[in-house]
Length: 406
Image 1 (cartoon, one colour):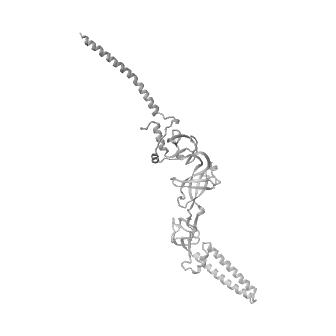
Image 2 (spheres, rainbow, N blue to C red):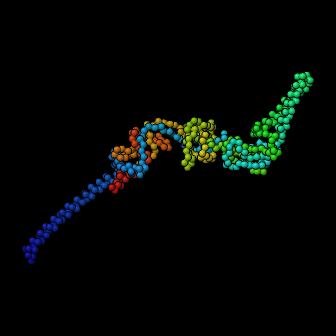
């Protein structure tokens, strides 16, 4: 039988255990409530972006701005060029291209210039030994001598006729012979000049050596580049044979293929921006010609512009992209396209304020390759980030979605 002291200890121990159990029960009932509150707070801060009105300000020191390459510019009104892109091709300017013919039949004695050589006006490209030319030069010298003789006879007959020593018939015969000699010499001279010989070269004919008497020099008509050569030394050529093609490459043509449905938007005088295929070289020109007919095979309209090419960066046959400036509009607010950053299905720009950089969602209007019109979301004069906006966007999204560990 238990003693009274043991019973008392049992009662006290039971009371203590009962109190502990009641406390544990109450604590266990309060645990889910605390977890729920913490989960709701985390969900509010980390899983959903804050509203646009409460966008976080991004703080960057001057050193960090320089490190990230961030540049800014005030937004304002501007002239927006509306452009339309078409394919184009560089072509030789046929106004500055010549295909040289031999002009006289003979044998090629010497070739002094080759493909790709730069030439100046008057440079000798080749020498043709021509019996035909030798005969024409001989006829010229003969006609020149006959003219000298006819002039002498005419002067003598004129003096004799004035002294009534000779008859009028003899005087008139001498005058007729002089006129005929002049006509003969003139005809031969014109034939030689038509072969590109000069008056100075004709005066030097009596001094030519027998070896050079039959030589005909093919010369460059203007400064340019030899883009084709069709003769070699020792070759026999005819008078009509094409021997060289010389082109002045300092100006080229741009042939633009305009689809028929876009023909109404292209006309002479419009400014075009030409870019090569890699997008590394750009130039401007103006349309000088638009074909009045549509090509039946391609269903396109030819538009042509003249482009300077002093540095030789444009090569005939090269494909290019041509942007035709179809309109110029004055927009009240224009920013560079580099300032725009896509966020879901909207665009935002980053504006610099006294507190830092703030994202602003904008509505875009008309645009071209470099600029875009802003309809809503910005005010004139606000400083917009034009370079480095992507870095600010990444920082903003990290802060917005709770990814910042600081």
